[in-house]
Image 1 (cartoon, protein in one colour):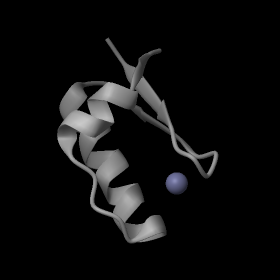
Image 2: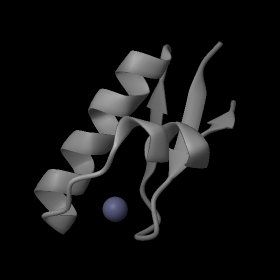
Image 3: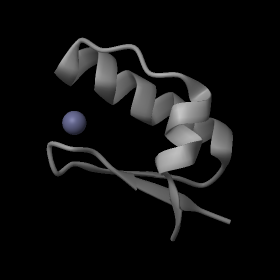
Length: 49
Ligand SMILES: [Zn+2]
């Protein structure tokens, strides 16, 4: 089932799988916020679409 995560900046990241969501969120965090985020943190903040 797809999951989404809304970043503090308002960007909504969507992934078809946990792995895809985590990869996209981590990429967003690195590029936009220069921040490293753990897989567990991403999944804790994610919501079922
Ligand atoms: Zn953001």
